[in-house]
Length: 284
Image 1 (spheres, one colour):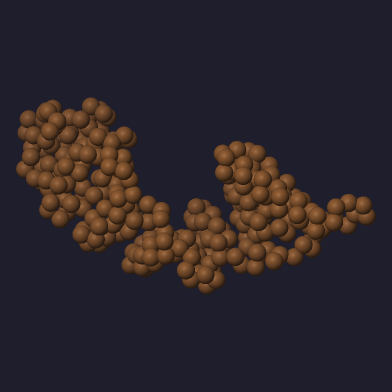
Image 2 (cartoon, rainbow, N blue to C red; image 1 turned 135 degrees about the vertical axis):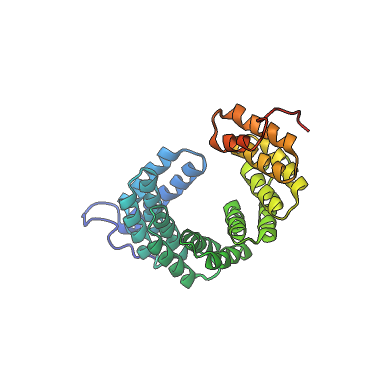
């Protein structure tokens, strides 16, 4: 438990250090409630007050660091989070929070060090393995990143990005069957018809690489029907359609891409491969 020394100035007639620490904890709790209810400005005010009342309250210090980060005061946020880590006695979760800040700022060596410190304190902390994996992936250490991602998944990591990046690594390594399995696991998190187009595109790419063109086309066609699908989605459908010898579908997809974004370079490049240019065909 963090020491309360320094929570109050030496004043003859005022709240005791114990009272100030209790008040700081209450403010932190109110801040969490406000945060959970989407009242971000109110939450920030509570966390700031909690930190000012008792700077040695590790919980208040951590939330104040988050407040500074949201305000864009990144340098002070990192210093404050580092102080929270020290006050907590090296809480692994706070090492991860600090590492996430360092990672967002592009300071990968520091982020990796924080991840390792977190794992030294708690080897089963999934978020620490994910942080380590993200840094390793950024550093192009793909095999090491895969090991860390799989470790995070085995410990209950639920973030969809973990499976997606794992799939990207497998695809880059030419291990398309594993890539598809990883994407399929991510797709299973969504209700039928609500899958993000980018995930369906990744699945289509993997299927095409495996030579399963018809299924890849069906998957990519589904992607084009999802909200947020862009011209690149239609271009990918056109490319796979050409591989499958379905030129009419390719022409339609190119036409849809250009209708959505006239002059879209990848679509124009694909159109150049068509002797008669892209033409619209009926949806299947």
